[in-house]
Image (tube, rainbow, N blue to C red; front, side, top):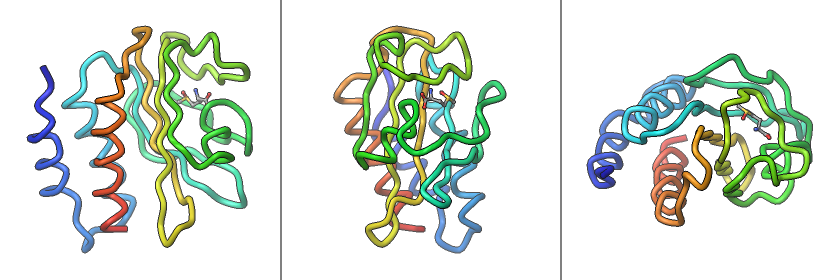
Length: 148
Ligand code: SME
C-alpha cells in the first residue's frame, strides 16, 4: 500500500523554489517512480508554441514532440484538465511510445493560469490509476506549481 503522506512530504522536502525548475521537474519524476508501483513511464512534457516537447522522465525513449490535440497528452493540452485512461487502446489517437503501456494519466501543470507542462504517467496494467491516485497526483502537481 502506497504511503500518500510520505509521498507528499518527500516532494515538499525535495522540491525547492531556489532550485532550477528543470531540477525540480527531474526529481519529481524520480520520487513518483519510487513511490508508485506498476509504472513503466513517468515524465514531463513542456509547452512551447502551443505544442509539447519531451522533458525529464524515467522509462524508455519517448516521443520528442507531440502536437496540440494529438494523443492523450495533446488532448490534455487542449482541454487543460486531467485525463485518466483506464485502457489506452480505447483512447482514439493514443500515441504508443512504449508498447507495454496499458493505462495512463496526464495532469496539466499551470503557472500564472497558463499551462506550462504536463505530467504523464503510464502503467503496464489496465485500470492502474484510481480516483484516489488522481487526487494524490493532482495534489503533488499543486506542490510543484507552488514553487515554479
Ligand atoms: N501516450 C502519450 C504519449 C507520450 S508517452 O506515453 C510517454 C499520448 O498518447 O499522448
